[in-house]
Amino acid sequence: MGESLNYLVAPQRLSRADFVVRAYRPGDGERLAEAVNASYAHLKTFMPWARPQQSVEESEGRCRDFAGRYLSSTDFVLGIWSPDETRLLGGTGFHLREGGLELRNAEIGMWIRGDAAYRGLGSAVLRALLAWGFGEWPWLRLAWRCSGANGASQRVAEKAGMLKEGVLRSHSVDPDGSRRDTVCYAALRGEWKDPAAA
Image (cartoon, rainbow, N blue to C red; front, side, top):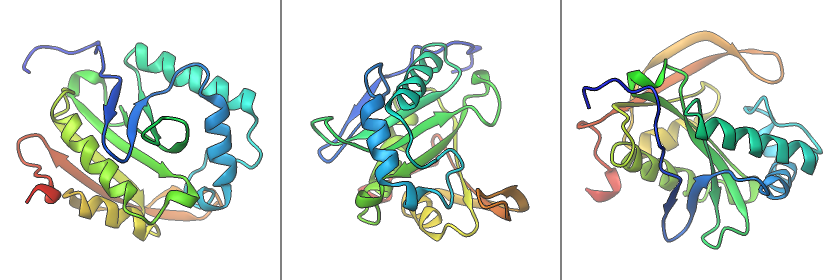
């Protein structure tokens, strides 16, 4: 792991009994539009990209953009799918927000559609991503950041065994324009242990 890393042939798919996490592909736009539109009221508070009545064409463009960035190793956006991959349950990814690929750091982001939220899916997906990220991926540090007002997101990180590193006060702006604190969590390769395996 000491060699320089400037391109990654990234894993494409992770399968678990209750969900599949995979890279977006051309043709996924209709399912992305359905999931975001059905969940707009749930997402709008903390997800600045969520807008009402997102068109299939717009969503398809986003899926193709995600796929292109995945192939170019500039961002790794993933969909969370039902086991048969017919329904999009949310989105996640390994984002290079802490520096370039060569640092082997990524930030995990996540959203869960409204009718699948508060049932343990987010915690299960995050644990799976941490295990996958420290297994098949080259990550040495995985981070999670969320609004100080988003208690559910903070609980997801804590249930997944991530350590709270601190709070960045008045750090960002929520979609409604109000300033907010950002709570920072992280896990390190060789240190993180899956709490579900204990």
